[in-house]
Length: 290
Image (cartoon, rainbow, N blue to C red):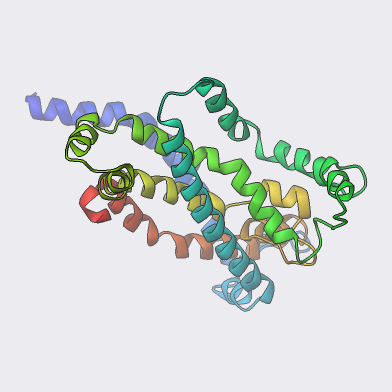
């Protein structure tokens, strides 16, 4: 057996566990989900009936789906932008020596160590209008506001998501700054470049692939937001804070319309997939981020 054949065989043998894992836990569930979208499958009528594209048409003309898609998109863009900027700022701040750095660093990472559902329960207790600490403090300073009112609930959810996930963006960009070549910064200092000029002309351009990686991961995760929002508002008041994940969950497990839920999931996947290669190209090719 030639060396080339042995090398090729070794790649397949070593990669086979991952391939089997992907086939069982990724490819097959996705296939089943897409297939279910073409059938009328519900708790009221367990007999499956092929309906073609009817479920997809029903979902695309459902005002609830369109409202959930709009809210999810705006929410994801807002929190991703804020968290990326704050994460980069925190990474720059922590990327130097100062007293208490280890304690500060550890405290920053606490929110991403807590399960999102548990964090939602904690937020719900803290923000409860009757027993919560935050409303009580606000009343103490003369601000009697309902945090879950229609005009305050969305900014509140954005704030909580920023508090929870900014540390994730910070961690990615801090790791990027740690691998930053120090000789480049030293050369800029020798040439008389100030901190702002060094940041704008050297650090940000060289960090673009890392920033895009953080932005991409947070955007995808924000679009899938479910736990905290569902625990706090269950998509309300009304359907004001219904994300795509909550819409699909309610369609499947509250309305019992599994075919419609599968069709909605497939539509979201089809819309998102074309953007993945673009982000991956910018992350993997530093020149593409220019």
